[in-house]
Structures are given as structure tokens and as C-alpha cells.
Amino acid sequence: MMTLVRRTTALGAVAAASLALAACGSTEAGQAPRPAPSASSAGPSKTAVPTLAPGPAGLTPVFEHGPREGAGKTVALTFDADMTADEGPRAAAGERFDNPQLIATLRRLKVPATVFMTGRWAEEYPDEARSLGLDAQFEVANHSYSHYAYTDDCYGLPTVPRERMRSDLERAYTAFKRAGVPHPMPYFRFPGGCYDKTALGELTPAGVTAVQWDVVSGDAFATDADAVARQVLDGVRPGSVVVMHCTRSAAPVTERAVRTVVPELRERGYRFVKVSELIGAADGRA
Image 1 (cartoon, rainbow, N blue to C red):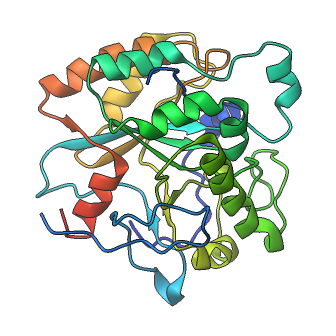
Image 2: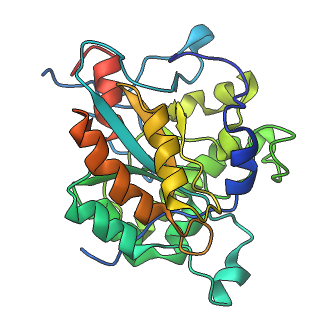
Image 3: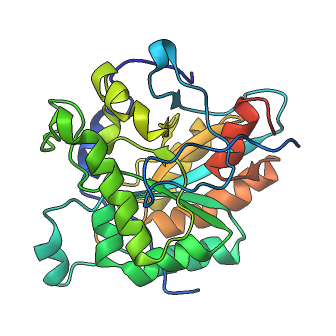
């Protein structure tokens, strides 16, 4: 589960539709875990947060879900920030890559969440990035700077050359710092969910834990909020990581789906947590 060395294809057809999606934003303002290493002064938080030990051959570890037993019925909702490096003209033309209504709903329902944000999105919406970074209900994690793929043949995405993979990751942390995000997490989600042994090796010096998922919401370009909610509710198990999106232009029904998913899962006895809590539990430190 936590040390897979393969190229993930779990997204299937849904991922191909979701590669252009952007992150969410809003203008609203046990034992101690070991410190996570930091690649640079603009890198991930130096505060002690849960991370996984390196995988086989010392490669970047990969996390897909938390413990199925022994840690209670927990689930993490995650929201990807897929604004790519070349989507600036679309934003300038008026396309909105944020969804303040969704963030307001998460705040109103008191649902913790992890936002995997691209550096390009943080540059486009620095106030919103800072708001999320300063809100203890959320944690901001790294989704690359460019949202270009770290493998070949990843749903048509442009590819980051091997020698630029680490710098692309670090450039995102620099963008977070400039936006005023004080403590971005040492977690990384590969664009498109695509990775291989080479990519894991190139990112090893950055000291991040790669975070995937085990439940695809299907919210990308969806028009039926009930269908999205059903897909999440049918897929969630204890320890699940759910991948969702929150951009008004490309995931218009996510907020409505969340309003269905949250009370239903709570009725089933689930507790919402951030990814950091699941990783801590998986590593035996929560």
C-alpha cells in the first residue's frame, strides 16, 4: 500500500477528464511525529508532521490509504489543484479555477481537508492560497508547479524532463511561500497520478511522501451531483483517501455532492480527517 513502485492507472477514464481541473480557494480567512526533511528554505514545513519512511531501495514512499482496522472509521477528502502552467490565458479571459462556495461549505460543515495545490494556481490566486494555508481546518500539499506529467504517456499531459522533476516540485513550494502559505505539507501528488521508479528516485532528496488515493469521486466535468455522491459513498472504506476537485468551470457539482456525502458518512460513523492524520496512523504514530 505505502511502498508501491509502479505507474498508477487507477484513475481510468475519469482521470483523463480531470487533468485540467484546478484547486479550491476562498478569500475567507499520541506520540510526536518525526520531522520531515526539507529540500530548501522554500520547501515543505519544517514543523514535525507525519511522513513515511523511504520505500524499497530508498525511493520516495507512496501512500494510498490509511489503516482499514484499528484506527476507527476515518476518511480524508482531498481536493486537487490542477491548474497547469499554460492555463494563464484562460484565467485572464475570465475562467474561474476556484470555488469559494465549496470552501465555505466545508467550513460550515467543519470538514477538515487536504488541498493538493499547483504552484501555478497559488500564483493565480495568492490571497486564496494564503487563506487556505492559514486555516487550521485545511492543509496545503504539493501537486507540482506546472501539472506536467512525471512519466511519458500520462493522459496527454506534457512531460517534465527527468532532470527538472525535483526543481518543478520545489518551484511549487516557492510559489506557496510567496503567496503566504506558512507551512505547506511534505506531501506530493503526481500530476495525473502517474509515476514510476525513475520519478520516485528523482524526488527522494526532497523528502516528500507521495500521496495517491483509493476512491475516485468522478466529479470532473460531472453534471449529476447525486451520481458523484453515490460513487464516493459506494467506494469509501475505513482509511480511504477520496480525490475530488473544486473549480467552478470544470467540476460544477462538487459542492452539492459534498453536502450529500458528509452527513451520510457521518451517519455511518465516519470521522473526517486530513491526510496527515491517516499517514500518522498508518505509520503507527497516531
